[in-house]
Length: 301
Ligand SMILES: Nc1ncnc2c1ncn2[C@@H]1O[C@H](COP(=O)(O)OP(=O)(O)OP(=O)(O)O)[C@@H](O)[C@H]1O
Ligand SMILES: [Mg+2]
Image 1 (cartoon, rainbow, N blue to C red):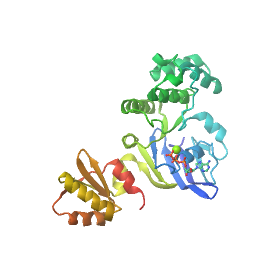
Image 2 (cartoon, protein in one colour):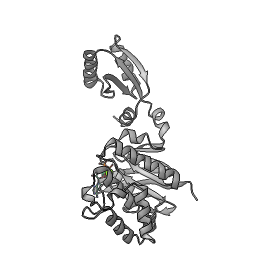
Image 3 (cartoon, helix red, strand yellow):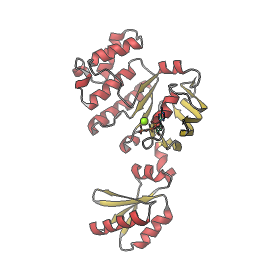
Image 4 (spheres, helix red, strand yellow):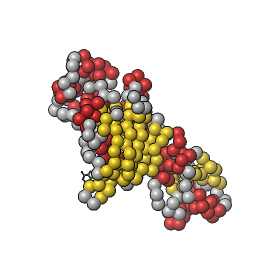
């Protein structure tokens, strides 16, 4: 068995005259929690739909769980779980009824046992008889996940599963992803716009307007980016003056306030050096770039 759950080569998707995914190749290791990041409209959902066999690429090839994405989409659909960007369950049905319906769709054997097991595993028991419309965001998302997991997929696609969910519920959701990754060997491909979630992934791919900018281990993205960051120790007024200068004259430099400090970052080392020299009275100390600085820094000017 291949060590890769997903392997796609040079896939492109053109809608009309617009190329929305351009020659993207990805390798998703089995058992990984693979984060797929990129700004709005960059092609994440389109790529996922091609990998699942829900959308035909304009060109390119690939396999998902060893099955050809061009010719074996019906097998792929049975073996994966896909939580789409819009939650897909029935708001008028209870948690239990939604799972019962899902079990019928997938023709799951021993449905009652499986439903009880997933309800217990996701701590949904207190909500079993609550209508989905009455659940808060975090519990709705858990119900959607339960529906995706009921047929025991080998590979899970989660498209922005935690958008709009509070930090505690997001953390608990991610703890559960790590649990099923370890316990069940589940491979998870997840899209997110949250930087703290990107850090929780074992591997990352980063796409911008259809172009793949990075694919590899999470820990390697900071050195790969070549972004440099500095903390500026100066009073508030000097910080604001520096920000104004950056906004007017240094478009490749990012300035961000964090905890009353000003951070500046860029992969344009010349611009950073010029700034450092422009403001000799400010103390600049080099710090480790954070993920926000890395992801914004990687976007081509
Ligand atoms: N069926 C379609 N027909 C035409 N254009 C489409 C279609 N589906 C997506 N697009 C376009 O393709 C581009 C990529 O969209 P996609 O939904 O894949 O981006 P995304 O990275 O998932 O964005 P988001 O973070 O907002 O979810 C966008 O410009 C979108 O408008
Ligand atoms: Mg999307």
